[in-house]
Amino acid sequence: MPIVRLRIEDIPLSDDLRYYLSTPHWLDALTHPLSKHIPPVAAAIRELLGPSSAEDETAAAAPQPPSVEVALKQRAVSAGQRSPVKRGPVVIGAVVLVLGLLVALWLWRSQKKTEVVTPVAPAPQQTASPSPSPTVLPILPTPPAATPTVIPATPSPSPAEITPTPEAKPSPSPAKPNKKEPSPKGNRAWQVWIDDFVHDFIASNESNDVDLAVSFYAPNVDVFEEGKKSTDAMRRDIESYNARWPSRRATIRGDVRLGEKAANHSYTASFEHDYYVENATRGEWINGAVAVDLQITIDGDSIPRIVSMKQKTLRKDKGTMQKR
Image (cartoon, rainbow, N blue to C red; front, side, top):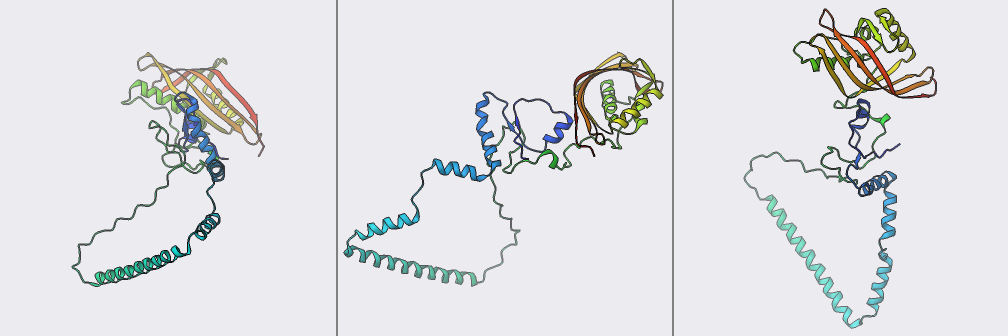
């Protein structure tokens, strides 16, 4: 189904939306009033509906020129009203003019052939530059300079038809093998270090590697309102959650707010993230958003671990789909 995308507010996109919307093009309506942006939208819709609608509207608005048959009849009537005495010289003059043109053309072609046969010194060989291919101008208006996209003349594909290019960021995959474990600080600033830790932690939720997910937690973790849990209890919870929702995606929304309680020992991280989980076998899905607060400490191996995780639900939508 062709989609006309119209952006009315400059809001940063999440990773999932950036993947689906960065490759197709869109129309911008960021400046006021909104009414001045309606003609480009109408033009885009008119083109998606096909050239016939635009041609019909143009044909209906423009006056219809007289047909060739009517024009010939009018010329015949006007010619019949002329005097037969004046028609003869005009016809003779036209015939003489045509004969003169034919003779001139024959002489020019003869002279051209003679010039081609005449031998000349060979000129230095030059590489012929290819003739420029004709440029097809897009029908839709070009977006403002701030948007580095050009509206194509053909309808944009739906998200299901998009094939990720090397430049496009691929959608997270539950079985993606390149998830990262917690690592020491190294030469990184503590802000970069803890920010990387948080992003790797959220990415581990998409993996089926339970050991990877457990590696982000301390031996005892204060989880939500359930109190402290051991590593074995966290492992059982993660295995149960992964079994209930085999397909999972999670994306951090915006920036992670970081705090340093004790240098190289204790940190805080607060952020919001969107998530989507589904179980195709049962035909169920959940699409939601949560606000998360983490307490992070550095263990004896200089590795950050989560010692407390609190979560608040911002949005939660449930639905069903056709079971597989």
